[in-house]
Image (cartoon, rainbow, N blue to C red; front, side, top):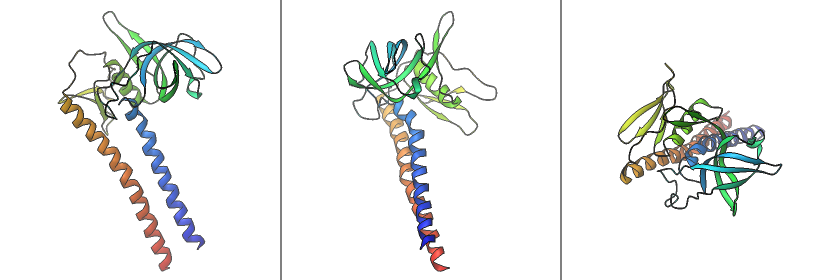
Length: 232
């Protein structure tokens, strides 16, 4: 009996770990598909024990909605007060940040899918934002997403190459051999609504498949282990 209970508990623990992995990998998908009230780049103008005040510089609205109509509901506040969390412990006045936020009341917001420091890189005829996430692939993708105005989707190949899906074209924005630099914003018309819906459907289907298969695999492992223990 104790052995069977141990098998079941192990299976449940595995299920929860798989669920956490799926959710953890999913935050960037939500951030880049308008699953918040606003996504903005701004400058920290005030820091207190409870809040950080951000002056907006740019608002990023993705061309891809997770929920129908999310684009039209995006807010474009000039200044926001953000309830502090652990991600903002080292924020100082003058820092630039990228923030995914939901509105609590008036100008008070809470962090939804993350808040990150960004660096402003300026050259003679262009400027771009470099988002600091602590992970190379995430940094490259989020930086390009912001610099391109939220117009494209992305994928990472097994060899570490990062692809921007730009209409029917696949543009390499990072290649580890040799390393490439994040590109400044390019001027190009948004893709058609049909392409947007097709790519969004493909990404959503992948997440659904992962979410469905994971518990089935775990349940099968638990059942096989239980049968084996019972036959002994």
